[in-house]
Image 1 (cartoon, one colour):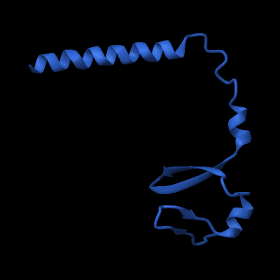
Image 2 (cartoon, rainbow, N blue to C red; image 1 turned 45 degrees about the vertical axis):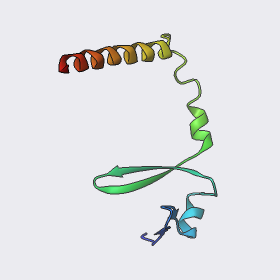
Image 3 (cartoon, rainbow, N blue to C red; image 1 turned 180 degrees about the vertical axis):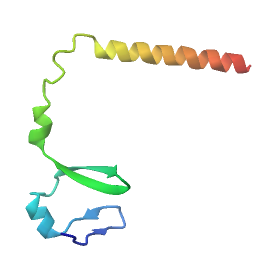
Image 4 (cartoon, rainbow, N blue to C red; image 1 turned 90 degrees about the vertical axis):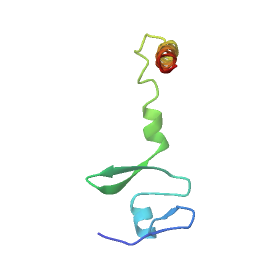
Length: 87
């Protein structure tokens, strides 16, 4: 089923009413854009799906923030060494 929509001057995508009803898209619905085989894709996502992710990383014991900060520190040191080599 092909239907025509439009893109506004602000880059907003206008989805035909029939498709909005079929996929239960309401004002302020969240969607995910992607690319697949050279085609633009749009997928509906709901708050329920997002909430289902709650706690999915509870098994991670490492301090993720500390790991990230350590990686950033290493990156910064590497960049400083490269910059020093250029001088």
